[in-house]
Length: 133
Image: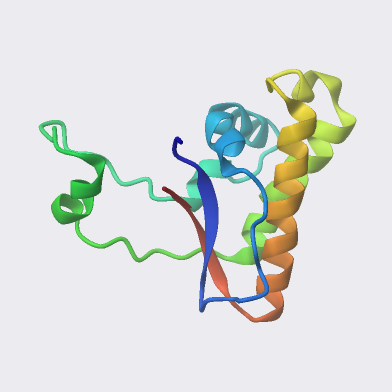
């Protein structure tokens, strides 16, 4: 099965359904961060939980919340859209950027789906974050 990345909204937005496979975005996260940095955008993964895992932690990933405590950080949809739309445009228009990705057309398509979700959630004045499950 495997882990995948998906958006979560606060407050919950029923109409913002992420109908893409978040596995490819998770797999390509390092390349997306690199592209975002080159474009002077907030890195893609900055919208997720970036707390440091303690060096001595050797438990199951599900136990990490017990060690670190609840994560309750939310991000601006406008800031997220700036990054995601910038990534989409770069992948679409710059061959050098697109070639950093294993499957640029699929990544772009999934980013476009993510952007559509964020636009819907923005209408509800929600905040968002990216989670992995």
